[in-house]
Image (cartoon, rainbow over all chains, first blue to last red; front, side, top):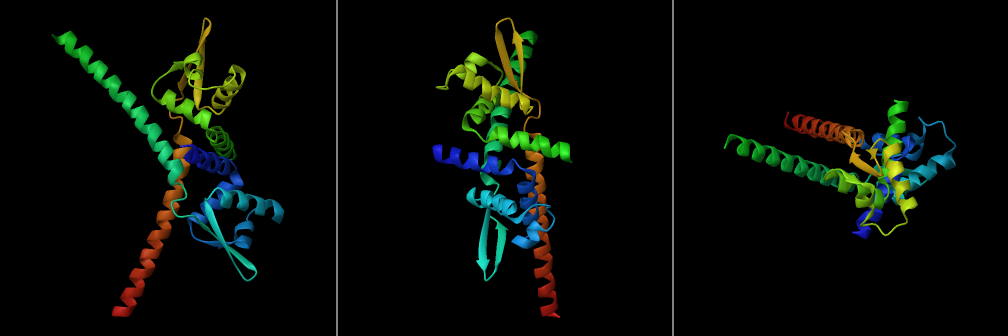
Length: 113
Length: 113
């Protein structure tokens, strides 16, 4: 649980920045080199590399260096932990609505008796 | 776009902490007072209130004070912006897989010609 919590912390923190989200959206379309990824961003390369490092440390992307070019791609199932957490919240919420439905159904039954 | 980005920044930052995620999970089950919410957490009240404030500032929860008791509840559609963003990434990714399918289908067609 603590390990999953730590991973969710990293994932959510990594997602809390528009540049990093733009990088992920680009990589969802397919792999790209660092220079292709950096091109649309008006940012010094060391800052941009910092964003890539945060995404890689969080396990959201993987990078491989071939010669002088570093290739990046989205990690398989990158968004699964976040998606699973949101799914759990929805299940809790729906459980609450179901209990409310039961409550109303019982009220109606009592009333029609 | 910038406004949506700013909201996503706040949401993801608010979600990047296990105490705040636990508060949201509790509230997904139904509204609760601050003292009910704080009970399971071994934390000084001012720190706990800081977490609630982050969640409220992000628009993930709403709070109302009645007399001396503050009641908290999950905001309606609290997770919609995050869920929508994840949905967009899935659509991009699926678009990529569709293009790959088309590519393979065309290869096979050329081969069978």
